[in-house]
Image (cartoon, rainbow, N blue to C red; front, side, top):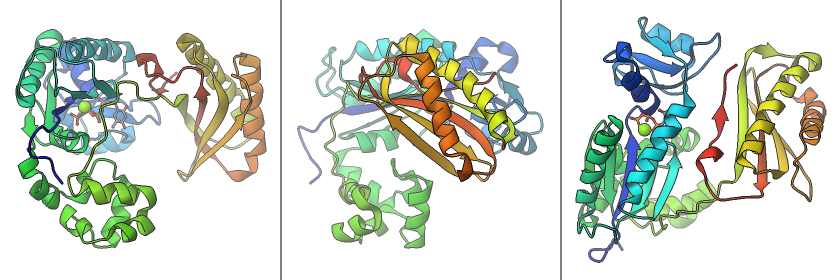
Length: 361
Ligand code: TTP
Ligand code: MG
């Protein structure tokens, strides 16, 4: 049942066109122009695009050449992760003025449980309004907010009036809102699930509701059961300030697809250097090391090796990485991306340093 009273007040905050807005703020020449952050290299992929560029269809995770094709006067900007982290700290310190129940999902977004808040503001909507304003004052950047009684609806709501928007979904409105909601907008439904749902003629929440719990479980496993509840407005997941960071990773798209072991090994060794730097600076090492390879036909191969101790030596990390590569060399013809990650970490609490890092060199 959707709670009618005494319900929680959950706010989801998400910065607007985050990396691109930071770049436009810090470089007046970029203001009002279509820009993409990342994607400028030979084979780079964009991280995000300014709203001016989105009008042309430029999106996150788009190859640079494609973005340029859609928007010929697009300006490519190199990412400055330190600047984004700085803003992330600033907005989190604002959130802290309202509640300690903050669950960051990435640098630019977080859930806040403001049911009880430090300023005793009775309405979640008013907390969200204040936060939007404080973020603007402190960072000169805009964000959007969603307010509801659960995480799922707060998250979906924050997207409804982007940029610089605020949406509230009350318990009363929840059921009809969910029925109308297109499946692709269900938070947690990825492209693959959305396509599968589409093939089953499930286009909206209303269609999804027609399936029994058993049918959903059979077709979509555990997430099917989750969606059975979600579409009925049932989502009791708490805002968890200690969400576990399960892995630390570094990955790199290669300048060209590589085939031979003697070409790939030196690249992997350079990635080991970056990866080790990252683990070392977070002072957080894992018992498991995984190698991720993306093939030229975009297949992803992930292979892991585990020890019963935390692997802290760079030479050992390197040895394991190479071992993983050599063991799997026959599984692909050419690769376009290599990544390394550490899991079963010593410290599993989330800190800003723990975000996955894609880097260029
Ligand atoms: P998002 O919040 O998904 O996107 P956004 O803030 O750029 O735009 P919106 O207004 O729609 O919220 O992601 C936050 C940042 O994370 C984004 O600015 C860049 C980075 N990012 C990537 O590096 N790769 C990706 O595929 C995505 C989606 C985001
Ligand atoms: Mg955002």
